[in-house]
Structure formats: C-alpha cells, structure tokens
Image 1: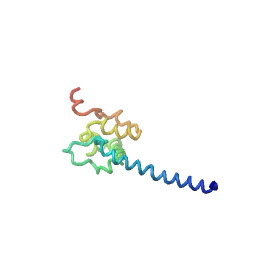
Image 2: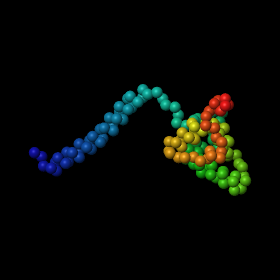
Image 3: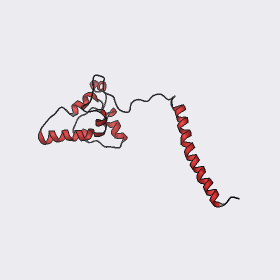
Image 4: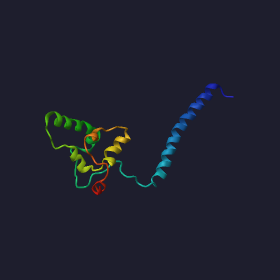
Length: 131
C-alpha cells in the first residue's frame, strides 16, 4: 500500500490532468460539431446600407452611447442648444427599438427609462405603417 502523501500527490495530478483534458476535449468536440450549426442572426439590428456611419465610430457608441446622450440632454435642457445628435437621428438608422435598444439592454439587465417621455417605435417600419 502506498503512503498517504503519494496517494494525495496522485490525486492532485489526476485532477490536474482531468482539468486540462476535459476542456480541451470539449473544445475539439464543439469545433467539430458546432461548425455544422446554422449561422445565427446578428445580435443587434444592422442599419440600412444607405447609412454609412453613426455620429461616432461603432466602438465608441457601443461603450459610451449613454454618456453621449447625457451630454446632449444637458445641452438641450440646460442651455437650449439643439445640435445634430438627436434621438430622431438614432431612429433613422435603428428603427426598431425591440431589435436594437431592448435586445442589448435586456441582455445586461438594464432598465431604460428614456422611452417614458420619448417615443421610439417598438416594431419594424412596415408594422408601424400598417397601424
């Protein structure tokens, strides 16, 4: 019979080896069989092709859009200055709140209160036009 220290060492090595092999095997299996899955739709709505760029670059808007909206709000409410950045301009490119704003905010469990005062359509343009 092995001494306790050798058994513990063997157990530690076994756990370490399994910790390496299981994720590696999962990666190989998911790579082989995952490539056969159909492509999923983009997470967020893409603007129509006629819109070349946003008011700022995509990365900036992804992480700092709320700061930009707050700055614009401060300018309009406190100073009465209406610039080129407006919620209407956002709606031009991103016409469907449920597939743009709500999808991302729901994913991060964020409750947006903008739309209590500001109108932003829930559905696509075709659905809204039929109503």
